[in-house]
Length: 111
Image (cartoon, rainbow, N blue to C red):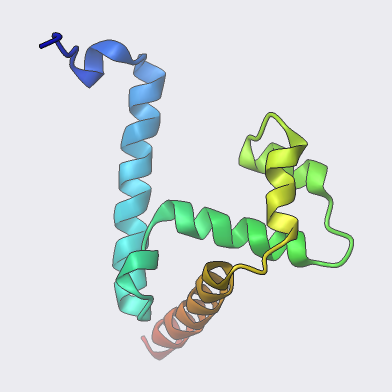
């Protein structure tokens, strides 16, 4: 069996920091998602990122080059995927996060 190098030895300090930041963001999204009633399978930072991109791309006159840079995509073709949000999951994500945002706003207003 080949020797596996621990993840910490395979990545740069910057990469490790980004992984940790991703973990922190996922935990934050989970906490807020539970409070907002968002389904558990959608309580991930990547899903939130995908939802934002789908909503941005659906806006009239959306500038895909700006979206490409925000998402960090090297190729505009990758970003163009968000121009066709006809997938059921895309719609479910957007609706869940919209409902969750409304619930959180209501919760904040009542406190």
